[in-house]
Amino acid sequence: MEQKVMSGIGGVGIYGIVSICIFFAFFTVTLWWAFRLKKDHLKHMEDLPFDGGEIDSTDKSQPTQL
Image 1 (cartoon, one colour):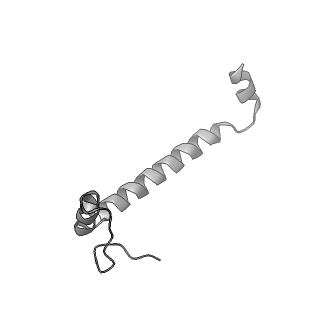
Image 2 (cartoon, one colour):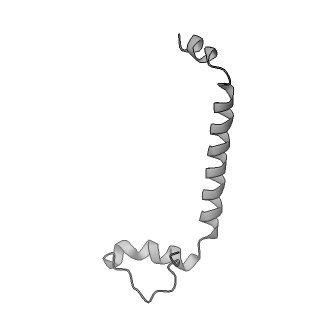
Image 3 (cartoon, helix red, strand yellow):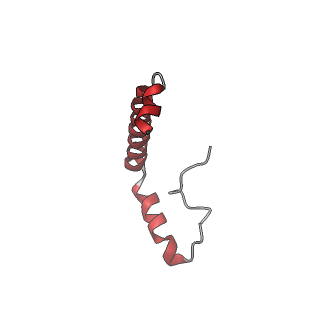
C-alpha cells in the first residue's frame, strides 16, 4: 500500500537524494569541526569531570564565543 501512495506523488525520488546530501554535508562539517579542535581544549574538557566541572575563566584553551 505504501508503494502505491508514494508512487502516486510526483517527484518523490528527489527526497531521497536531498536527504543523502543533507546527511553527507552534516557528517562532513562534523568531521571538519572535530579535526579542527585544539588539543589543549580537548585535554581541558577531558579533565572537567575530575576537577568538579569548574570552568576557569582565565583558561585560554576554551574557544571564543561569537
